[in-house]
Length: 193
Image 1 (spheres, rainbow, N blue to C red):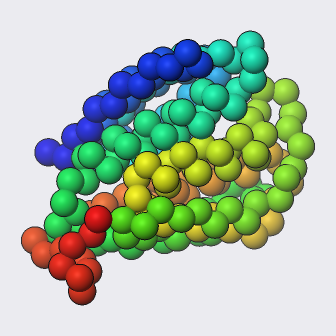
Image 2 (image 1 turned 180 degrees about the vertical axis):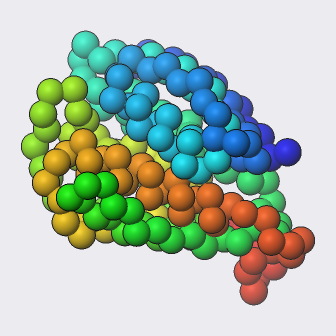
């Protein structure tokens, strides 16, 4: 089974993430930010990744440190679990509706971290993370997973729906990209670093 475990302790955050890429989307998530916990539960459910996530941080200062560091740790755990990436499909795509919102996602498990984040800066309502926090989450995620990720907002108004469409769409795209299809490396180079 493809599993990863990351522990990260700094003066700002204390995080444990354990994942199984070949799971059933079961989750046990507890962070100091309720909305982040909700997004991570959605991520596990729709990616099929079993996850145990515990994350505490200095949210009395701001949400930024905890959100970014959880993205970093999730990226590291997925990279660890993917190993040499032999046999994976590598690419994944989704067009995710959430009520009035539509977001398109494209993933390439390429070994080359890159984030395209075409989402407008819609202001938050109480208890929903700002778009800039979500962008920092995915910056940390791609930089530590080696994944190229394109997130393109098509339309929508409700910030909760936009965030939910993003997390569900990334999850479905990763589920497709991580699928095992054979035994060879999906690259003409013969390896994915």
